[in-house]
Length: 351
Image (cartoon, rainbow, N blue to C red):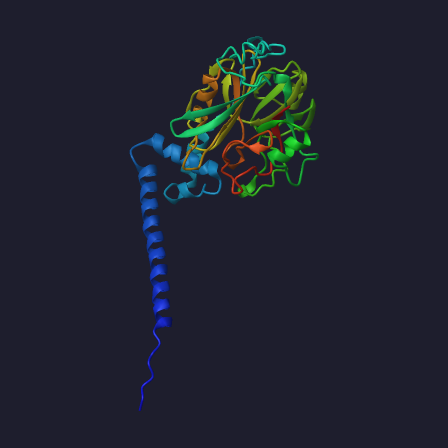
């Protein structure tokens, strides 16, 4: 009787799949053990500063804010967060420190070519917009300098509520050259639609959102001077604020950088807005959560703004909201899932 030969192809394929699956499982287990060991060292190790930086980075990430609680209690993480999130700014903006230069230019004539401004930055094409690459240890970003502050304003969707607009769509709505993201928005569990701003919001001289948060306000008045500090709607009207949003914390007030625990906020993408003594507006976007740029703390953003001559500056919404747009394209590297802009309730724009 002739015996039938067994076909081994199917079983070989099963064994191959089994080995690959086993390798994947083993890799995940080893990676998980390594990650947990590293976290334990960070949160239980001898360096409170390293622990706090790790906790703040995770908590600001939202999607991973549960990770510190693997080895820390809710009370411990809340204590660390509250100790590093102080946004009470009682000092009023001293408007005398800003002297807006009328029709500020950096190019004198065709023969002499481009000329540096008072801070050493050159407007190559004479359009009043200067873009500078920012490179520091651990992060990179871009700074847009708008020499004439009257060109800068806050844009928003047609109505608040529902879904916000991407930065590109906001720029198109106002026929703007570019801008950066602005204030915070209601974002439960990291799944917000960008339609509800968090904090006082002023657009075109009108209060579009009263805000009931304690976030720091940042706004331009009718004389194009940037104010940074604690504001309510009545104070905004009294000071003639024409455009502004809320987030914080303040980075620089009246030429003095802010220091303290709240400046060491963890490492994440950052957006900031500031103003030099000559009135020029500074828009900063720092990349983060990526191989080429890990991210920055509030203190890092403050230091960059000081380097660029800011007299007043405020941190804006960061993380996956950090985005910079100019002449039809995103010029930073956003960390959002789409790699571009998430839906926003408002933005700092310029024409």
